[in-house]
Length: 463
Image (cartoon, rainbow, N blue to C red; front, side):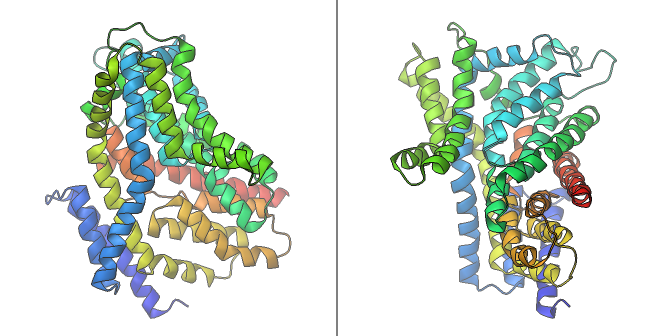
């Protein structure tokens, strides 16, 4: 049974989210940043938070999101600007699309996204990928589509969604299912599951969900929705290089893969060297913010020769200006998430689900789903849910801990909506309306979640 107080919290959270949607989409047309702040305050007050504590929840939630995501997005945008103006993005986009067809481009994007996303949080991976995605989209638009944006069969096609959908599906699949990504890695530790088993079982599931949610949906979505990314952001990532000699392909690749290498090296060195000196060094430079900063400096040195400090400073300023509106909205989503946690709505969802007495796999997925819906963060959902189901896993015979980890991961990415920072990052970066975000990104991640969980249930029946 759900206590009356918890039922009230659940209703408050649901109605509050509906109110935010209505503020943004009805003729009121409240700016998403303001709507998220108003909704956060309203939910907190109705849920019974003290006004002073509520303000702390809003500011802490926004600050935590911007602190973790904002710096990364700014550095990623600056890196993309340097790559674009030096000609590196154009060089990479040309190499990735040379000899390709419209049918093969999404496969190339998925392969690239898988490599980039493996050790990185979703927002970090998208920040690293975005300059390349926009560069590839521009190449698709100029070399594979006609002047009206139609493919050889006469169908109007969005180049940004043609490359964006497979990228989003791939990053979502890795995010949920494949260590060393932080989510499934943390869940494996909480459940004492063998990480090798999680990788062995999660990798084929991730490949399947990438194919279905990325490759099969890319064409239909690209032919039905035509978002227009912010012109200033597109210009940052696709502007013609500044007249110098275009860099060699190797020089263009290094700044892109360097953050990936540093973050992955942090995980490897920590495992192999424990708490030694090398672990401390890589524990520092392998943090995403530091790794991206190193990549920006390497790009400045390797790609900015002869362009002067003034040009580099201008690139930094342009990157910050381009990303500022997106940061505000992401901060608003963080505020909403913080209130959902601090008001007890997330805890109420967990308690209500735990009382159902169902299969550990279904319980794990369902708890992760409901916490995800309440607080927005996939990482919070998977870590919180793993702590709730851990006693059930240890006391239930015949339960494979690695499959429980995968069930948690699948549940943690379902139905991204207004309190999810990545939703706003995707929406604003690709210039989507709220409806287009739900019909694309939300559908993609929900497909990965449900299909992945179906595969987990099938594997459970076979093992």
